[in-house]
Image (tube, rainbow, N blue to C red; front, side):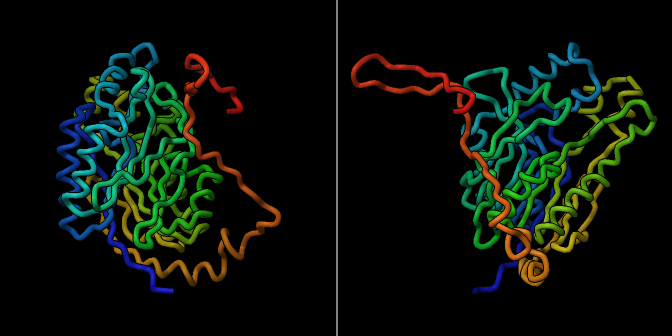
Length: 338
């Protein structure tokens, strides 16, 4: 067996240009160029970086959110489409593997959005297109549930790169699904804020600590590297949502995120980075081998004769078209069982 490679990675903590798709793509190009200049082979951006996380869900009443939702739909993208071509071109121009969170729109419904993560290879090809399995709590005001399509690591010269979005990193079965398919580098993307409990002045949620707990659990259990990137909250987004309301400002700034990189022992390799910037590290994938000799939950430390996990990786569709040779086209709506 040939030795496993070392991979130079960059975890980005940055704010998009709030709800401005073209300007955010331009900013992303600049960030990727900076990361590549620092030697990165893999560049990871945060949750819904293109072009903004719906932070208003957490602090505004639903009846006060319609304007923001319209702007979010206008700044969302269809996959594939011209914006994904641009993202691929950015990866290709800087010769990096690029992972980025986006707001994806259903081309057949202006009202439906998904929280998606896209991975492009160094040639600019879209090689992984994930939709968040379950929108978390108030995110359901914006995003539909996703699916298990592309819930798999992508093979990149031995990297075996997988990705989960925010709360998915707490989903044991989703994490195991990636590990059981040979994941070696795990991407975990997070939002710019998470206002949780308004009954206390500090809003009772330590986002950085909770991110590190999840990342360390996956790294240690799976004996993999974890690259955490997050979207940041800038003054423009804060001003647009909170205005002069000091309580809303406090809620949105009490839970800042972080970028960090962890090793197969669950310890920090780099970070946490809590201010906007780019975190770099070199990952020696060979470290997985000795760690798994003792504790390999997808190998000798599991029992395939006892435990089995079934995953449906189909991408659901509301409409199936069947062309009948002996009559008119028949349109079927599938049953809940598929």
